[in-house]
Length: 441
Image (tube, rainbow, N blue to C red; front, side):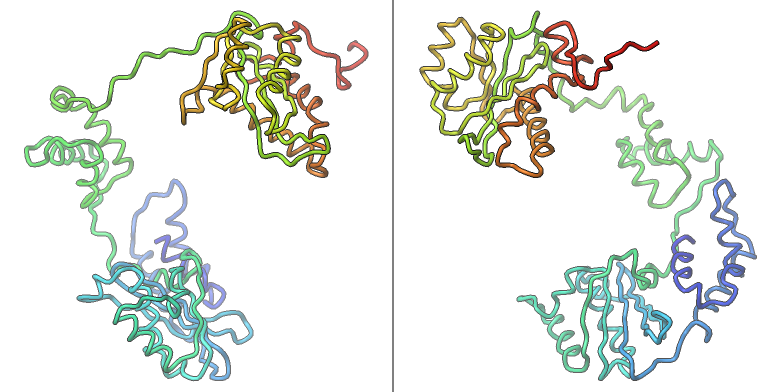
């Protein structure tokens, strides 16, 4: 019913007293209105059908104007609308709907959509020969029908017929905007039986499609598929799920194929700030006047405090070590554990020996498993986001913004802790321009 009204409503301005004719059908679709098909509904539908094909709606073709065809196909039928714009927008001249037969039912969807166009041109050949025609289809690949390199014999015959007799262009138009989509739907309605709200009857169907020997005690998906072929009632999927889940035979006899969950072992939380530190690089940044094209990102696992240190991709391991000592160790002390990926700088002999002398344990991520250092990977995304916002007008000096962006990040509440990294490190909040200078009274 919704499909029919959606189709009819497109031409409502051409149907006299459309609202009056469609009112009984529209009322039937109102929320909280029982769906009960009565004589008045059937009469309203027949009147609408008659109005859609009567003289006030259909216009006479103007041989001096170009034509428009909207064509569509479904599994069982094809449909088309012939239209023309005579100054009042596109108006229908004729409708076409044909059920597919025999071998046509086995055509691939591409060929069915093309067949709809061919049938339309054959039916309206007396109008279309010698005039420009625009064909709208909801099958995107048909735009390239005339230029595709490989064609079947059937497609060659169709194109030969179209190219010999007509001037036309094929334009893609999504199905929900295509009127012919309604004409191509199956000629017969659903044959499913509505099961009334009578629990013993629904229970009997559930047992018939699940419990009996030939039903096989399958799971909810297969049971639902079997019932849905012939029957329907509201919330049927929920009823099937509940029935199968409560089946004693299934629960006793079916072995679980799901692997047992492994022992959950959350990463230990450090006891104080800057005991466990992770670091990573952000590379591929535009070079600045200072020669920086990368960022060394360091994060404390306890407080989530981060440091964004400008560097360059060609920096040697010794230079990276100097940055780490200057910005991390001299400010926060020597960490007990250092987490990183397997960057050549972090796997070098110099780096390993330096960390060994400092008494810092190296913990490197496995290959192709960045989740090991997930906190730093996430912080990298935040840094890139902050940079994009700060340098939208001038990206040549992004390294000058890093100290301010670092402060902004450390003074923002972290979702994991509910506190700012600055507060967890220093036990206080920094004084900022936003902070009021006088107390509230």
